[in-house]
Picture 1 (cartoon, protein in one colour):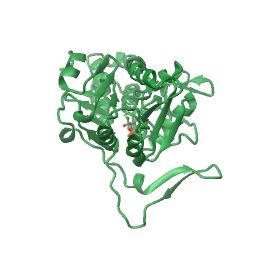
Picture 2: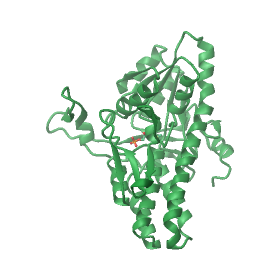
Picture 3: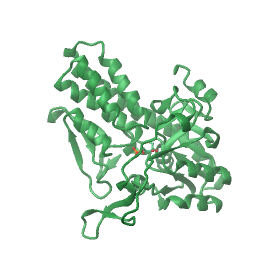
Picture 4: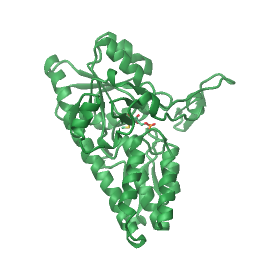
Length: 365
Ligand code: MRU
């Protein structure tokens, strides 16, 4: 993603600054672009827990660098195990976190402590490079869906895509998952327009997806979360494409709270509902997503309060819920496979089913 003409990944290493790790503070976006400097695993864990960095593939990548930072302080096996466990507890729903940490442990475990620091940075970098290439290919495999709609509607009719939450550059290392086909479609000149669900309570759609689409010049409109059904009833949505934090082997999809309702509305209105995912989001150990995927319960304050930029430019948080009312904040929901038209992966598209996933990923046990 380009900001002020400079291409950035969403996580990188600053070798000239003691091999510290750099991320954007996503709690400040889109009002301020602040780059954070992480120098130890506790800082990486804090950044993930507080959602300074977020999005399923990205938290895996940052956790991997957290392991590298930890190895600099103490490269013993006991410390490796401790830090993998500590980072693994920062956020429960996205499986990419566990995937990245298991990959780091596997790469380092059999090495001597003296070799672990360099190997840890190399493995974390490989995870990032893998994610970038994976997301680019997800874009290539999603693009034909948008081309088909464009061909059907004609060049003066826009292709309306609805997306929920943020599954773009800021949720991955680059390009994104659900947004990757959209960026590619726009780049090749398709008349694509995105309905961006604001995505309460944290507004990742209004704040982050909209920010990315502005930076990339993609036409879009932010809508309240409850607008999707109405837009679909009136033929204003050609396709839904969302990201995901975990997909079970039968194709159930965990994603940001509210995704399930969009899938129900899509089914009722005959709108195709596609889910974009990298291999690191697959959890072949789980079958029934509703029963088996742990759903993160976040702080009440995310529901009761809203953060934004005041007229004088200050970033401000205000309470919008009646004093004395409690709030509940499940951060994700599960969309059953029966509501998913198909999955867009780096290996191609498939139906949301065990047969479909096993055909694409035969090596996954
Ligand atoms: O709670 P978040 O913001 O870390 O949620 C992750 C997400 O951005 C989405 O649910 C997304 O669609 C999956 S990540 C590509």
